[in-house]
Image 1 (tube, one colour):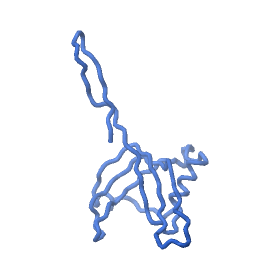
Image 2: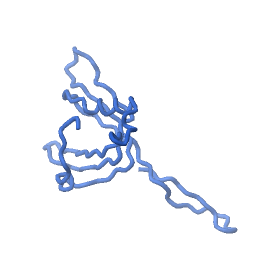
Image 3: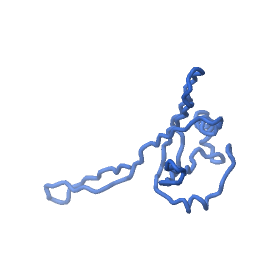
Image 4: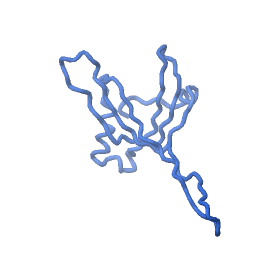
Length: 130
């Protein structure tokens, strides 16, 4: 995160005062092994076609990310509030490569905060594509 810096002078005081202003969140870059799911691509296409501007199909979504340890347990859970895909990159198309196909999405967000596994377990689960 980053805060704007507000500056001002008081009366005849020759020094400049500062205080934190609005908070800005950096874009979030996510990568995953492509598993045949096109949900991220479809979400990005919704933005490209301008469909997300319709209030009945909002383009912003709350995204919850779990950072996993090697043993599969959750090390940290993050909530990305008001996220929308500002960039999507398809996996490399190399039939001769044995490397996994990596899909990349960049999410622009309104807010980011840490949450708990318990809080995530209370969230409704939706089928893909919904």
